[in-house]
Image (cartoon, rainbow, N blue to C red; front, side, top):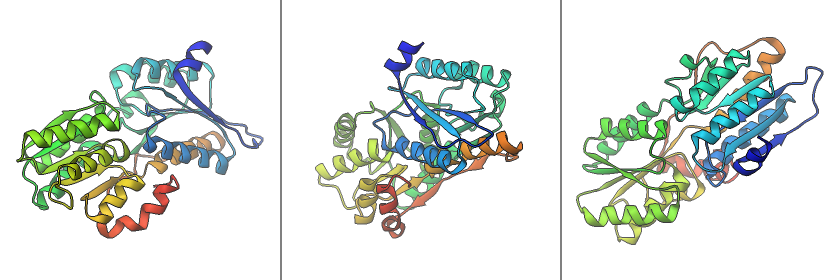
Amino acid sequence: MKQFLRAAVAATTVAFAAPAFATDIVVVSHGQANDPFWSVVKNGVEQAAKDTGVNVEYRSPETFDMVAMSQLIDAAVNQEPDGLVVSIPDADALGPSIKRAVEAGIPVISMNSGSDVSKSLGALLHVGQDEEDAGKRAGEKLKEMGGTKAICVNQEVGNVSLDLRCKGFAEGFGESTVLPTTNDPTDIEAKVRAALDSDPDVDTVMALGAATAGEPSVAAVKALGKGGGQIKVASFDMSPGFLKAVEDGDAAFAIDQQQYLQGYLPVSFLALNAKYGLIPASNVSSGPNLITKDKAAQVVDLSAKGIR
């Protein structure tokens, strides 16, 4: 197991002066280290550890690998922590490991993905956004902006949360095709450009991650000479580069699910639960919020600092 953890996991221990009620919490997410979105989640985790004085370990597979992630959860359970935070992109693959934690008496909170299955797996609550509803809202907004035919760029097909985003988007927008890609921005830019080049009727691009897919989609549109809103580009989540595109009119909006809260709140809740037995009675919605041109400038600095 130690060899596996060295090879397959990026682990960070956030240790601060522990109070008398020394509390250990493990966070296991599916996000890759090269994705700026997850660095913001991790920043929230670290700040919560500092503010509450608990010991927190943050772990994630090096790739989108559900087998590796389930093993990380199993390893966390074996440590018998005072709390466990997990994202749930695939309930079938991760469910048994999460249930094992619950059966062992470890309080579990899910975050980011898994709002639809969190309760059934025994988690106390979920912190995140309803992905299908968020996708539907984005689709409706882009349709209002004049969009008629779209592609939904999915860089992690099989991640239930991203699949739900595309599903909701199609419900809200209408004619939409899923464009499967890898997690490589260069690959995404090439595939988006090819898709737009092959079908001139596509006037809308829905990306599912700002830095990973949103920025490459904007670059693809501009490379075809159709920037400035000729082809509308929107993206889930935020990055300084994509927010600048929104501010400049090269992108329509970003969908902010406030992932900093997704890292911060579960750790804080589990710390309070360990010390006082306190826990919120229901899920906490962290989004969605549409960041349009009039709001983009306000959050660019915070995004650059890893908070938004």
